[in-house]
Structures are given as C-alpha cells and as structure tokens.
Amino acid sequence: MRTAGSSQANPFACIAAGVSSLWGPAHGGANEACLRMLLDIGSVENIPAALARAKDRNDPWRLFGFGHRVYKSHDPRAVVMKGVTRELLAHLGCSDDPALKVAVALEEAATKDECVLSGCLFRVSRRCAAERKKIKGKNN
Image (cartoon, rainbow, N blue to C red; front, side, top):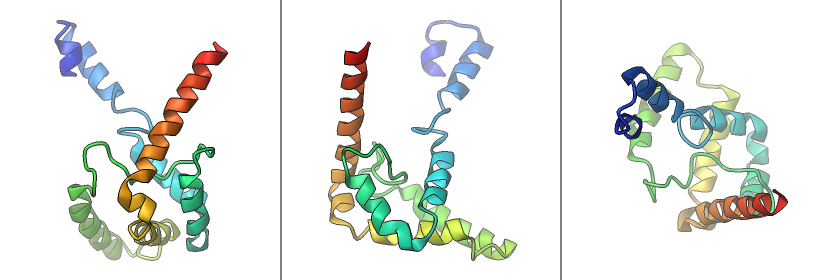
C-alpha cells in the first residue's frame, strides 16, 4: 500500500493495491494453500511420501508452512497461534479433525527432518521456482 501511495495515487486505489498484494498462495493466501496441502496429504500415513515429494526438485508439489523468508528457523507467531488454536478447537469440540491430525504429525515429522532443519527444503523450492521461470522464458 505504501508503494502504491508513494506514486500519489488515489487513496482507494492504494488500499485496493495493498489488499490485492495479500492475494495468492505465497502470502495472504498461504493459509488456504496450507489447508489444501493438508487435504492433499490426506492422512498421517502419507506424510513420509509428502516429505519425499517436497524434497524432490523435479516435483512441483510444495510443503507449506516451512521455509519462511523472514523467519529462518521458526515463526514466533506460530507458538501463540498453536496454543490458541488448540484451546479454540477443544472448546468447539473439533480436536479430532483429520486435517489437524495431519498438521500436527507433519510438523513433528518435518521438524525432525534434516533437510527441513538445514533449510535445504527452502533452497530446493527456490531453485525449482527459478528453473521453472527459466524454462518458461525459453518457451516464450
């Protein structure tokens, strides 16, 4: 929004630009992309295969929730959100949600995985994105 505002555009256009910049799976839409990923994994038994796919540089499938550009080791907001989420879901009687079970097990598995811990997973996804851009550029 500040970037759009620096061009002295109409305030409504600046607000629209700020809201629009949150759209998409790499930023504000990451929550939706993460839920889709959990549904795609389906069950706790599929987590090892999902981690293997995430590490395969030839597979476009991505593991959301790991490898934040700013928070290199962990997102400090997650500690607070995890506690509040558990409390809210227990209050609502939704503690046995299948996607939640996958999310909890995925976090446990991923935080023990050497590739995820070393940041290699993030580098793999960045390298794949760069390679896809290169290929796309050659096809134009």
